[in-house]
Length: 391
Image (tube, rainbow, N blue to C red; front, side):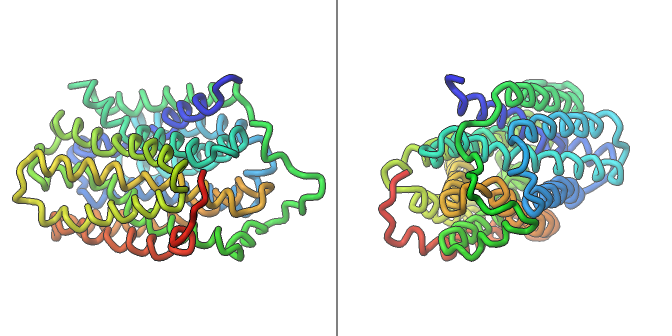
């Protein structure tokens, strides 16, 4: 394959469009099912819970390193597409909706972490920059349903979800044809893949520092993505259910892809740890400023949200690169899946609490997210305090 990383990142874009597909229809679902903003948070958390249980299963069992990552990715992308389509066509309320979104989350556990392993298996020497492209595509995939709704105009809300399902099937085909890279093959003298061996990674100081930084980052990231439409409305930039809201939500989430790519380029100069620390500090500043920016001109508020959208995810690929570098190569897939599982468990708390606090708090809900990047900076400190390692 001449361009394996390009194929993987495009497949990641298409596959992860399943993640927030229901959020693009939030206003329609609230009207049709008679639910509130907190229920949209619950639907989002159903995906997160499925993802957590799926990644824990892959990690603790070692399945992520027992079978080809490309095959796991392809199967999970197809099953996720079917569950997402069923949500669009068959769900009648919160009960059936939560079951189907939970299933989507389980399937995404075989798409996102295994996509990271595929990148490392093809270009381990460029992991930081390559993973920046991968997470950039995850970010665009998250924003994509909002973009589909914007382009679709007055099309039914189900259309955006069905398009996302078709894209996920295409992702499965691309990865199935690509296969795994030549690296990360098990050594003959490697220890057996015993149940729970992945827990050993937390005894490694560098892995522990990277993981702690990632956990703080996760407190903010997915809650921010979930709250983005509400933050736009609270800033007086668009009305609920309008094309302008879809466009701004797409731009604010989607610009994170540019942040990831820029961070990947910069990591060649200063290293992944310093890129991650800079992004954490910048997103923390945006958290702090948003509630007091209500009187700023419209363009200034848009710029603030765009900077926040770019910085909030720019650090994500570098946590994965740092963790992959720190742990034994024969358990990279399990280690990344385990780190993802714990990080996404944290997102469930911040998403549920953030959406519940939103009606009473209004714009100061951004301050609820602020401890995440601050704690992340503290956890990551051993890796960025004096590192001169280049990626």
